[in-house]
Length: 262
Image (cartoon, rainbow, N blue to C red; front, side):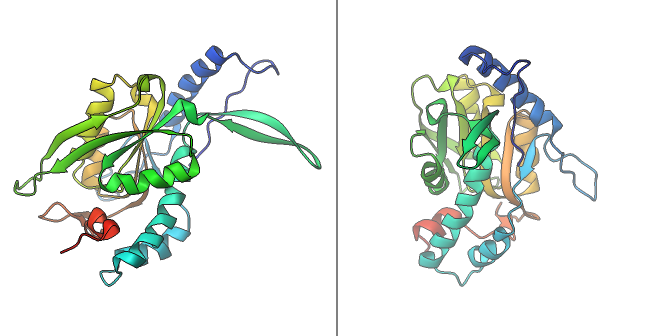
C-alpha cells in the first residue's frame, strides 16, 4: 500500500492540531486516489477504497494455509507469517508525515507514523483475535477493543448476531484498525462497522478494515454500506458457495487456527 505524506508550506513542523487536520484531510484524499479494483467480466466497481497487499510471500504461505492436509500446528506458523505481512501493510495505510532524520552517514528522508496512543486495534472475535495479535507484535503499545459477532449457521444466509462490544475510552478520537481474517458475505464486518461508526461515533475515514482473504460479494457489500472505509486485503478469491464459504478459501479460519475442527 502507499504511504500518506504531509507537506507543510514552511519547513517548520505543524502544531499537533494542524497536524491532525492535515492527517484527516490527506487521509481522505489518499483513499479517493487509490486504484479501484473492478471485476473484469462486468466492469463493476467492487469497492472504492480497496488495497490489495502484494507481497510475493503470500503465494507460498497461502498454498500451505489452504491445503486441507495442513494440520493446525503447521497452519498456525504459516498463518502468523502471513498475518504479520498484512498487519504491517494495513498499518502503513494510516496517515504519516514526511520527516528528515540523521543516519550515521548523513541525512535521510523518512516518515513519522502515528503514535500507538493515537490508534486502536479491534478484533471481531474469535478469528480476528489471531490477526489482532500480529498487529500487537508490530505495535505493542496499541490499545485493543473486542466485538463478538457470530453467524447463525442454521439460517440459509448465515445472518450475523451481535453479542458483545468493548472499546477503549475516547476511541472516537483514535484511528481504528478492524481485524478479521476472512471477509465472506460481509454481514459480520458491516455489523462490526455499525458498532464503530454508529455506537462509538468513529469517523469512517479513521477506520481501516484488514482481512487475509475476501470474496467479491463481501467486498461489494461492505463498499455499499461503508464506501469511505478502506479495506486492506491479501487476496481476493472467486466467490461464495451455497454454504457462504469463500471459494477456494481455506475453510473455517478460526477452527484451523485454534485447532477446534471436528
